[in-house]
Length: 458
Ligand code: NAD
Ligand code: UDX
Image (tube, rainbow, N blue to C red; front, side, top):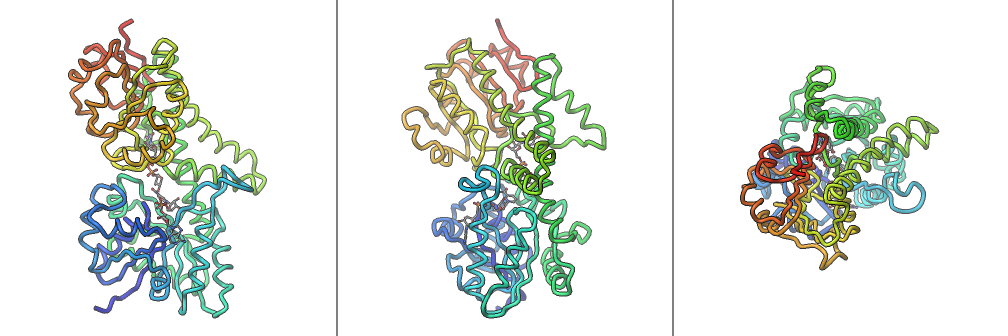
C-alpha cells in the first residue's frame, strides 16, 4: 500500500511511543515509524508487554502496529525514507559541566540532528517534540544547515502537553496542539503540513500556531505554572497544619473562583515526574543566562517549596512516632510519581525512601505498577528494603503506612483487616489525602493527613 505521508519519530519513550501510536491509530493513510537507540525498548514495543504502563495504550498500539505503525532500531533507514521527522529524545537536567543541576542536557538532540544530516538525501520537516530551552530551534537549524549535501530542512516546534497516566486521553482530546514555526513561506508551508496531520482528529480551533520561540517557551511556562499551583497549595498545607484549617476546604473555596479554577490544587507529599522540576530548573537557568535574576529566583522557589514539602513529610513522621524511626517497620504505599503509571522518575518516594533509610527504618515498598522501576532505582540498598506486590502482605507487621501514590485501589483496601495486622500503635501518613481519615481514626489508627489536623489517640 502507498502511504500519503512517511512519518518518523526518533525516541520511543513515554512521549514518542504513545504520541506516534495515536497518530498511526487516527491516520491509517500515513506510515508511522518509531526508532530508538535502545534495542530492548524497541523489542518491548514490538511485544505484548509494552515498555510503559499507560491506560488504553495497549489497545491503540495493537490496532495500528504492523498496519501503519512500526517500531525499529534502523534509524538510518527511517531517516532516509521519512518526509517528516519528530524528535522526541530525552532532554534531562545536565549533571556535568556548565549549568549542571539546572540546564537541559541537549546531547541527545544534537546527536539526532547529526544523524539526520548523515542519512538524509531529501528535504524534510523536523519537528521538535522534546521539551527544549527557548531558541533551541535556532541551534537545530544551524546544525542541519551545515549539511554538505545542500538539503533544505524546516524546523518546527510542537511541544507535547500529555500527562502520564492520562496520555491516551490527552492525545485523543488535547486542550490544544501548539505549532511554532518561522514566518517564512517555507516555515508556513511546513506548519500547514503538520496541522493537516493533527486535523485528522483534533478540532481546528484546538490547533494553535505561534512563532517558534513562543512555542518553545510556552511549554516550559505551562509546566512551571502547573507546578507553581501545587507548590502554592503545598505551602498553605503547612500553615493549615499549624492553624487547624483544612487545606482541602481552603483549596475548594479558592478553586471555586472561576478565575482560579479547581484543578491542580490537591495538596500532596510533593510533585514528582520527569518534567516539572527539570523544566522549571531549565527556566531558572535561562533567566539567569539573560541576567533576569529576580525572575529566576521567583521560579526557583517553586522547586524549593517542593523540596520543603517532601522533607516536611518525613519530619512529621519522625515527630509523630516519638522522635525515633530506627528499626521500625514502615510501608510506603505506592512508589510511582503519580497514579496510573509505572514511572518513578523524580518520584517523591525516592526522596522519602532515602530519608527513611537515613533514619534506619526497616522499609517495605509496594506499588501495583512501579515495583520493578523502584528496585532498579534503589540498587545499592539491598537488604534494607522489602519489595512486596500485595499491599496487605506489605503492611502486615508494620507500625506505619505512608501513602505516597494516589492509586485508586488504595482507597478500596480493607483497613479493618490492615489495622488488625499491624503493630500498635498504628500510624497512617496520608501523603495524598485520599483516605477516609475519620473512619480510620475510629478503627484505631493515628492519622496524619497533609494540611489537616492530625487525628490521634494520645
Ligand atoms: P524517555 O527517556 O522516556 O524517552 C526518550 C527516548 O529517546 C529513549 O528511549 C532514548 O533511548 C531515545 N533516544 C535518545 N537519544 C536517541 C538517539 N540519538 N536516537 C534514537 N533514540 C534516542 O523520555 P520521554 O519521557 O519520552 O521524554 C521525551 C521528551 O519529551 C523530553 O524532552 C521530555 O521533557 C518531553 N516530555 C515528556 C513528557 C512526559 O510525560 N514524560 C511530557 C511532555 C514532554
Ligand atoms: C506534567 C504536565 O501535567 C503535562 O502537561 C506535561 O506534558 C508533562 O508534565 P506529568 O508530570 O506526567 O505531566 O503529571 P502531572 O499530572 O502533571 O503530575 C505531576 C506531579 O504533580 C505528580 O507527582 C502529581 O502527583 C503531582 N500533583 C498533581 C499534585 O501533587 N497535586 C495536584 O493537584 C496535581
